[in-house]
Amino acid sequence: QSVSLIAHWQQSDIATATALIREAEDRDLEGLLDNPQTLRMLFTAVSGNANSWPNSKTQTYEMACAQLVREHNDDHLAATHHSASPDDKVLRAAGYLSAILLLSGKASIALQRQAEPKVGTVALPDLASSPDAPDVSICSAALQTRLFRGRRGGHFVPTNGTIRGYVGAQYLLSRIRAH
Image (tube, rainbow, N blue to C red):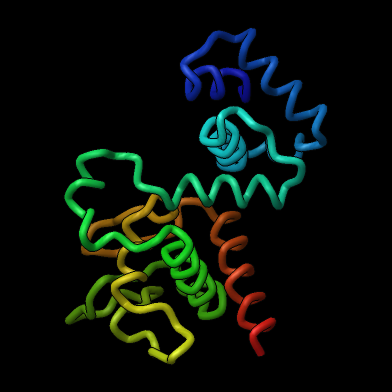
């Protein structure tokens, strides 16, 4: 099954996909091969980094997040050229939003307050703004990346649960280190 998914994603043949799986196993990354989400994350990281392989699971997450936060559509890039935020700020905002979801037990973030709030959703304008929290506009930009996917009604959920955990933990760790 993993071989077929990789062949599809990479638009390659079974032999090439099998070689990629062997390479991941040789690098002790086989734990990422069992789940389609982490499998895709691994190959997003590798293909987005000139086929350079990560040395660890942590580096895999770093590389995948760097790819997922980056805008790859030229038309979108042109449309947001004047208002685009640096990727590191957008990734930090994604971590902030992910930490909010993890700590609150909520499942989604709405861009605006709802007349009838959906259970399990936090509204972006309701998030406490402190000097250390990312700006709401950068949080909104984070929701537009491939780290999140939109749902009906302007609600956004993390695309991948393990990446949500990783970026959320990275944000919390940075806050702990900053006291």
